[in-house]
Length: 67
Image (cartoon, rainbow, N blue to C red):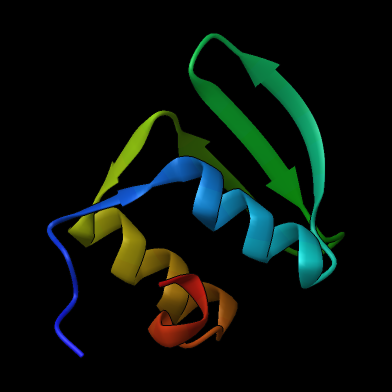
């Protein structure tokens, strides 16, 4: 499956919440999530592919779960 150039921030947040992350704060279009060890900030409404791939790598969640 080819990775799209842009990924919706809402889709990323939904998967991270299912994996045990909690929303810690929101300031404008930035939402911060944490699972106790790792802190991630997602930008709404869209996230570029580079940031998306980094989130996948850091969290250990495969790209297929987000798409």
